[in-house]
Image (cartoon, rainbow, N blue to C red; front, side):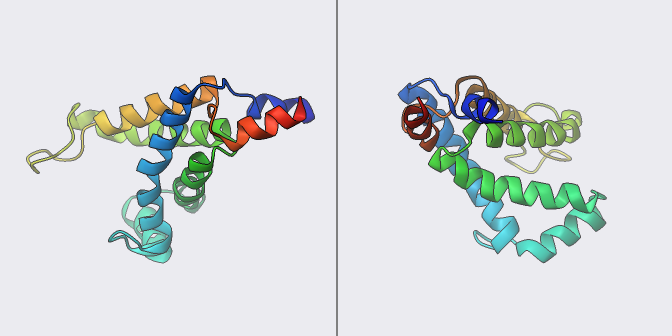
Length: 151
């Protein structure tokens, strides 16, 4: 168990990986805050769960996971706490999202002239998340501080 935690926390002490982690966390946070708290024009937990399960047909456990990953995962990424775990969670979530966007093409629906959103945003999220999965949270992360103390 200790070895697994050590592998999760070990990171390359590179500022660039910290920038990737912070960017991903800051971009995902408003989406999670919309879904959980109703901030940034969102509907909050109950309405989001209702929409995900009734309108989208997602199982309640999947809907709950999406909300928790976006909210708590983004905060943890900003802090750099268990960065690899949250990055793989976000990448997995967006792999599910991207499958529904493929039919809409690459580009986002900036002008409302497509049936839905393209997959370019999801692809960027997955790329940033995989960078964190491979390299860790970077120099400016709680992971780095914790792993230095364990050494």
